[in-house]
Image (tube, rainbow, N blue to C red; front, side, top):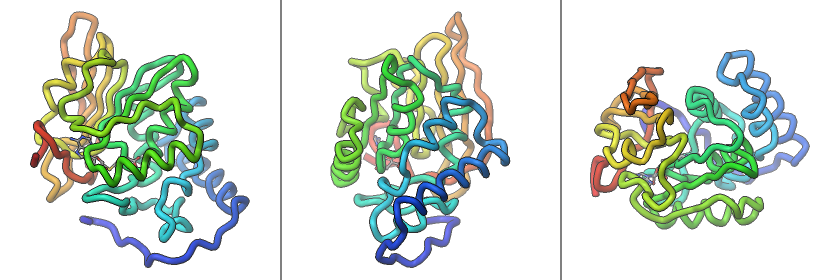
Length: 235
Ligand code: SAH
């Protein structure tokens, strides 16, 4: 993994109470640092237990500002701050339909489910079978059965549920995949890292106007694993 030092794997020792406290402190820090702003996203981050989505050997570090490797190839659970970074810029809110490319651990999908609420919908797709099974087990254990999980190539989007109010791609793309732009709703927003997996990438926000015009905005430099599949870096 480029750019991070991951602590040594260990047998988890922390209690539920300790994790809860760390979660509250993390939310406080994310708010102070300006990553977290809206009530719906704050509430979701306070509710979803990130430690349940981190592989056991790294569980005690769940609230460190670090990504951790997941079962599967080139899959990581992103740093805690990257979730509000995406969801605040997307303006994700209750009642919306979100499409996530790269389910990973399922943590981002669970947070999104809490944010969009019962009137919204979360569709998420994972290309690696082992990672997909890891996410599926996590979602089942935590009762997120209403998140629609797909095993497949997200660079093609998922047409049956389109258009989507919001789309997030959590792997770095050579360019924003065309099919995903086509599956974006009018006035919808899409967020994705664009650039080589070998170096820092540009986190890009695309906004579609009422008349279909696309506006592109650079958010910041980020580090993500490569997008695979037809419109990714490798098949
Ligand atoms: N959102 C995740 C982070 C995922 S890391 C979380 O919260 O844990 C990026 C993931 O994208 C990896 O699991 C990788 O296997 C997956 N991925 C890469 N290319 C993909 C593609 N074309 N379609 C779907 N998933 C893809």
